[in-house]
Image (cartoon, rainbow, N blue to C red; front, side):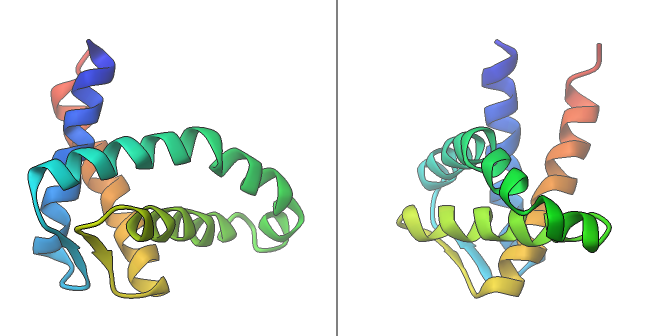
Length: 113
């Protein structure tokens, strides 16, 4: 049940993103559902591999390279899902950051333990 609530929270965060950034576009609720699911899968399966492979660069930049990895994952999902568009790399980095903040805030409000 919690997994379903987190999925809906991430979908809501994706739907709120175009109102904050004009370079990110989500066409419909169904598109947001698919993109949120794919973002969750990419962040769970592919992101840890990228973090491990880029560990020297991440350490050298004192962790700031994680923002680049998050932006790349966000941009990759946008290129895979029709109806979910991101303007460019830096828009993807900003979108990933805002998406994380929005989903964290909604999770903190709705998932109290």
